[in-house]
Each structure stands twice: as C-alpha cells, then as structure tokens.
Image (cartoon, rainbow, N blue to C red; front, side, top):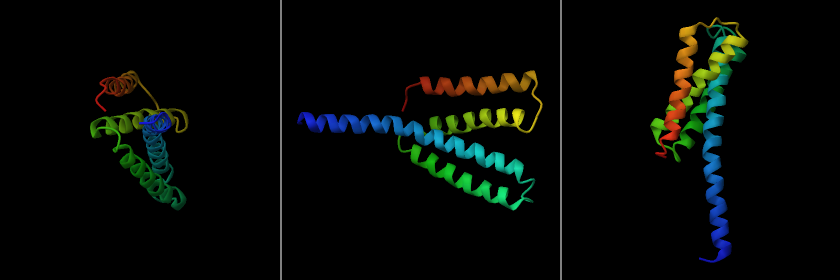
Length: 124
C-alpha cells in the first residue's frame, strides 16, 4: 500500500472513530429535546410541542440506529438512555423547578458511573 493511500485510510478511520461518538451525542441531545417537548406539550394539548416530540424522537432514533453500526447495542443503549436520563433530570431541576432529594441524587450518580463503566469495558 502506498504512503498516500495509507494516510488517506488512516485519516478516514480516525474520522469514523470521532463520528461514532458524534452520532451518539446527537441522538442523546435529540432525545432530551423530545422528552422536554413532552413536558411542555402538557399531555399533547399544545400542538407545537406535541409535534416537537415526534420530530425530535424520530431524529434521535435515526442517529441511534446509525451509531449501532459502530457500537454494541448494549453500550449504545446504555449511554443513550443513561445520559438522557441524567441530562433530562438536570433540565427538570433547573427549568421545571423539580425537587431533588438524596435518593434521586445518588441514583443519578450511579447511572452516570454505570455509563462510565460500560465505556471503560473496551468492547466496541
């Protein structure tokens, strides 16, 4: 293999390594937006937010499906749902003024530690 071809494929591989994480990140952001729209839709009584639920969840599932090309399903789903829960909880706390107690705090920390642990497993 020529040097030019090696450099090209090495750079392409590096882009794919970064891109797979971007796919998960976009899926998480869209999922959090969809969940936030659910709350704002007030039981689907506010049409613009209700439409947002479906649009953001469709986008989230699309990017989640693309991420599955590069990761094991157990890793992708754990990261997506775990970080989605954590971020949504922070939004609930700050934006919707939801209350948090010690049990909820410890549970969220355990979710985040679980996601970190799965990422450290190096099974992708």
